[in-house]
Amino acid sequence: MQQSARSDGDPPDQDIVELLRGGAMETAFERLASRYEHKVYRLCCSVLRDPDQAQDAAQESLLRVWKALPKYDQRASLSTWIYAITRNRCLTAIERRRIQESLSDPAVELEVESVQASAPERDEDRAAILRGLVDELPERYRSALTLYYYGERAVGEVAQMLGVPEGTIKTNLHRARALLLERIRALGLADPAQWLERLV
Amino acid sequence: MNGEDDSVSGDRLERALDRALQRNLVAPSFPAGFRQRLQAAIIRSGERDPSMTVAALEHELAAQLAALHSEYVRLRQRTLGTLIGVAFAAGLLINFALPWISAHFGSNGVFALPAIGVAVGLGISARVWWRRSALARLLP
Image 1: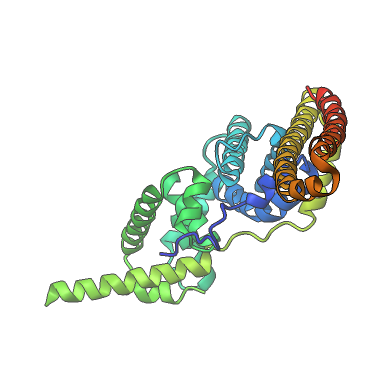
Image 2: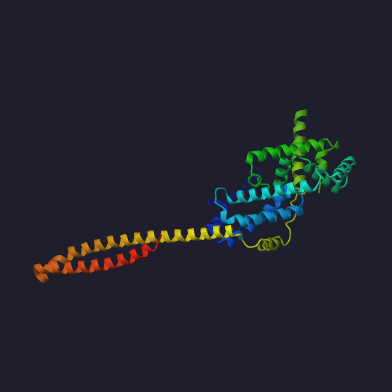
């Protein structure tokens, strides 16, 4: 597994921290946004599973980062701090959504069931089944798995994004794959490996 | 033998799953115009509230005071260095000059000329010290 890499001996984001120390808030934020906006958006996509909501949550997260920037005290690394703010925004968004919607969506469940019941021959069907199986994983496995494959498959970075130790991410990835394999086998396919290899 | 077959097919399945996930779990594309919307949201958020402004100003003031303090320390170190250097040079000069003065100006010259030099040096030092002390008093 690929680990998160550091290019040199400097702590990451030292340039941004120096700018903050010098009081250059706007330049620091510009640099921070360029470096983290994609990652923040990916984290929001992984947690919220909805690109539109993820976009709103990512924007709110970075807005909150901007407002809190003068109070950043360097007790945690900048990335840890940004991801913590993002996770909080995502949790708020989930809570808001939970209030607005009912917990289950019967239409989506029916769709998944109908796809599973028929023989999955078309590539789109197979891909939909795989994504459906991923969506049905327990949240901690699903978020670790999606962030791992959304990004550069770096365990360290996923751990930082989710605020858990690297060992936990490795365990969750292993269990997520094991659960997926178990559920793929349960589909009753003649050759599950070939079925997976034919996925586009 | 059967166990080995299971292991091989298990490995193949795991590799196939990894490849399938790589191909199918792709992050949604980053929304176009995200940064512009973020900038607009920042502007809409009404600049900063007063507590943010106070925090930013306090941060700026602390940075300026730290810079002033480090400059003050550097100045004191330079002054001390200069004094030591001048004292050493004066000692060296006297060591070589005294025999020459006594030869040309007699025994009184040995005391009179260095005394004039010391008086001039003290005057200059006092002036410099006074100016720098006045500068130092401006600091908190």
